[in-house]
Image (cartoon, rainbow, N blue to C red; front, side, top):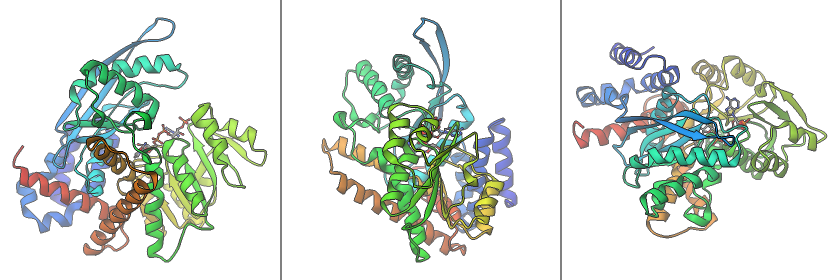
Length: 446
Ligand code: NDP
């Protein structure tokens, strides 16, 4: 239940942003946490900080025309939502997926504001993408799409303005094609304009691993509070993309056994533990479905369209997409003795799913805290670009671990201060919100 004032604000958000359910869900969750802050800081209300935070500073929607290999013309829609720049240039990834709409990009951009604040780095929040489906497209087609996308987007970017990175459907390969086109149009090698670049052309070590590793570092911190660890635990990780694969790698390094992972076609169960080289070969090199994994690992089983959350585990990491873990999945995790859930993806657990996990006593690390390692390491990449420097893997990984520990500490301390120890959702929302709100107050009515 929201209090009356927040309820009015939320109704207004619904009215002004119709048919954007994911954005509504993200706003509702933050408003559900910040009530106690407003009673402590009346100037936030008089400055209409919440209403301003819920309204993006700028929303860019553009046409992306491109030609396929047969010469047929296609038109997609591109988006960049520059949500909040109180703490720094807009920062957040680009998603290429047929489900992308303005509402999707707004939900992701909104989450990004608070996540970026939690990292302690000077970065604002933004997100972008297109309703383009890279599945089944040739490399040439995807390159042409990336070039056309950047031909419009470039005018809105810059290291002091807006700095995109990857997300679903956008990895180092796509960032390369977009960075190439940006460089060509502007005639400037502005490394700090995009992050997630390849190592040979301005990228940073650990950036590819950072989101997955960071989620596991956050998980470790939560478990440490209870005197537990990852070692010897059975784990399930949904997804088989950048975040999932690197989360699996770190869980295995720490002594966990990951028995299942998934993609958009189903999940694979491997009782011996997911074999990373096979997984990487199938998903990163060959870009096939997990069926190809099961064919190469005789003890494993592929469940077409199956629900990965039916696999019993002590640790669950949803690392695929939004709303992939619902109330009945959460109930099943609780019944199966799950101890902890850390969100590698953005908003993968539905609100009723979160409530069931909470009631079941499961540790819960929300995405805006648990998956902040990716954007934090993007900010480290920007630092290295600005200084014309490159750091070693161990130095960068240590820095990432330190940032994740600090995010955990902020969330835990804030939850404690507001009388809800262990509530990382409340802690993350309030700690992130207060940083942004303070900066917005200081910068005046803009
Ligand atoms: P990738 O494109 O690398 O991988 C996404 C994975 O999720 C793929 O295995 C894909 O299946 C699966 N997937 C995508 N959509 C669906 C769906 N609707 N149902 C089931 N499975 C699906 O993306 P990332 O790993 O980069 O991103 C995963 C999540 O993490 C997203 O929520 C993203 O916003 C979030 N995130 C990513 C960050 C990053 O640094 N990359 C940073 C912070 C958050 P398939 O292989 O069949 O396509």
